[in-house]
Amino acid sequence: MLLNQYAEKSLLCNVSVNGKTSEDNVYVYRGDMVIEEGEIADSQGRRHPPKSVVKQAVTMGSESKLDVVAGAVDNLEFIPDFIAKYGTDFSEKINCLFYVSNIKKPMVVDVDGISTTVLPHDEGAVWTMLMDDLRLEKSDFKGQSAEDKVITMFEALSDYKPGAEVLPFDQAIKNTVEIKKEARGPV
Image (cartoon, rainbow, N blue to C red):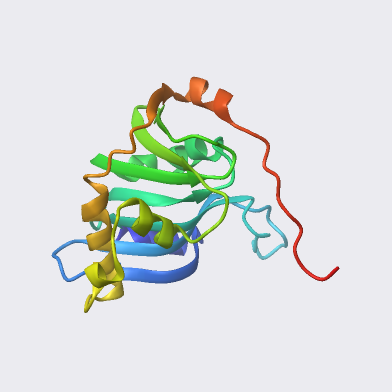
């Protein structure tokens, strides 16, 4: 199975859900997906932490293809790298939505022929932001397993139209901004 292959290659981390839904041949994942792996740390092949990830990724697909991917990235430039790494596993009907820290306006971006919705992201949980953007309530998920909740989320996503400008990636990258992170903790 595709998600198991990713796990074997250490491309999945901070896993919260990884399993089969109640529907035939539908598998879901919630957690982080590695975009760029960390350097090899020792002679046993262990690695440093990943250099870039899709944070709080939510995916749905079959045993061999991904149909939907959502998550958060710090930089718009990470998306082509994500598509390069996982794109051969995308189905023909792939639906991608990313919350991106270094943009200030919603866009639909074409990356290597993959239409990808990108929305500004300051902070917050991807699942909660998806619920808000798709106008879902907690009651919409009542009584469902963690896996089946992903199906409900992505059924709503299939009808989502952000009303954003459609741009090729080379134009979209001109709309990025500098990320300003606030330091938190004891003074």
